[in-house]
Picture (cartoon, rainbow, N blue to C red):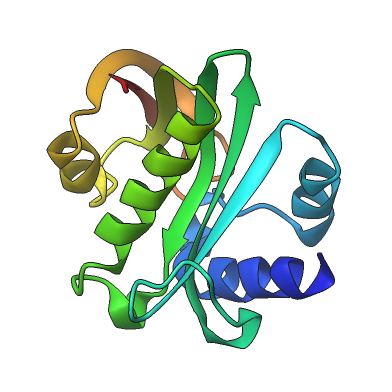
Length: 151
């Protein structure tokens, strides 16, 4: 698990802009990975999900409760954005959730996150709005948007 944790943290450090306060600490990720209902997916630049941890270009961290699952974190390195890696990563997350008998997926993102177009393309629909949710953001709290998708 240490290799996966290192890979997740390397992608997170490059992918999450510190201005928004969205990134998790190493301890938060490690603690979550010890839980039975938390799953991770790693992907490389070629979109391969069976990947060498040194080649990881994206990851997703999810938490399942019964037949629902939440995407806690999802990130792709800035250097491979726009190449289809994010699309392949999200498709893999959905496939793995289906294999675990999940029927509904959720995610929450910062209002204005450019990845919104990807989520909408996959059929995620807005179901909620949290005013001032991201309190660590530079320039004041930012709103969060909650999305869901039946699978």
